[in-house]
Length: 93
Image (tube, rainbow, N blue to C red; front, top):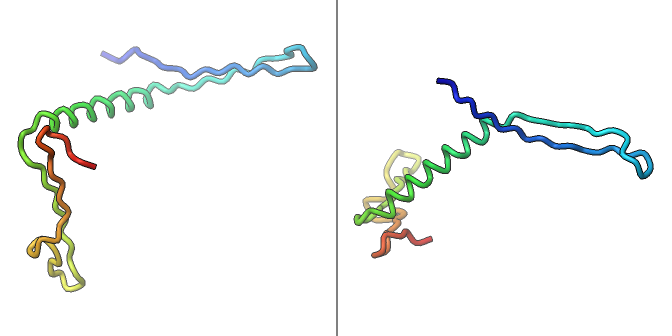
């Protein structure tokens, strides 16, 4: 079934001649796709945070850096970027 929800951004701009309103300019845009994408992003973000909020494990992010010869210059020597979860599950920073 096709989603029948349509979201319109509508704006009225009065144009005056002296003190009287002479005409009204009406501008409308269909912002349905933008709003649906924002809602999907928010839902995804909430699911992501829920996952990490409920984890009891440590979270580690490690980025390998290579020199011009393709040799790893971190990781083996422990020069990575680490994020550690706090005891209550939050990630600092």
